Image 1 (cartoon, one colour):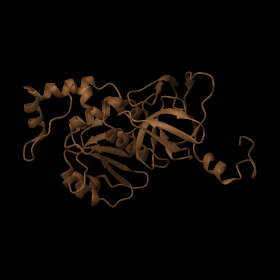
Image 2: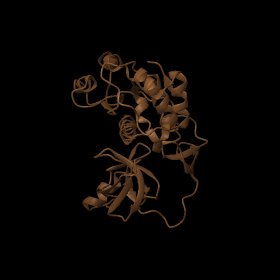
Image 3: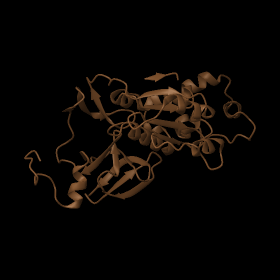
Image 4: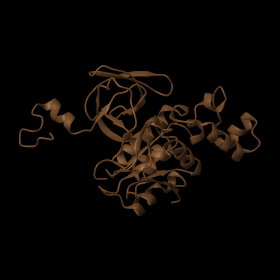
Length: 286
């Protein structure tokens, strides 16, 4: 996917009270243990640990657990805002899917439910931009299945300095949304200053605090205790490779990419940002 550049009807057939009316606006999804869920207001992504109908406990990729009240629309599953409901007593099984395939009980690398037999959706007008080739390859490795099903193309920005021109050329609109994933999105950074200039409601810029996408791979996954600190003024990749004794940076990246198996191998900030961006560009009407 990566490219350069009441069944009954009637006026009283629906809910009357406020909470039920709100719930009816979002598809019901069973809150089964292990389901990857994004809490949209807080941007926290994690797998469901417990659910009692009033609160849900999510465990993030680092093991951190957070408790949230169950409010319809506050959660997203597979990139769509949903209403979490109590799971059935019977085990989750394969089921037909509206996209022409079968929803399997197993999960994709991103934690969403796998859909087998469905053809990739025709590309939407909405897009996701990432800064470079490695960003695109990592996104493809973890979210590729989801993006193909949703018809979202990922394009390479080739640096945040090109963002203003890219937005202007893209021409965002209500049905043509643009999600942007950037590195080093921290206060006072160049990336943060560029992101702050984006005023279009049809463009969402999110990112990670890391200088490079390599560091969004958890150190444990990479087989190291921590990513080395690189002095300012030293190119980050060159500094990392020197500190780790790596002689062939391109080969090292391929090794890093190979050890990433799913979302749990990535830092929480990248997972949360990608889930929000997919949610944004696949919103109804986008």
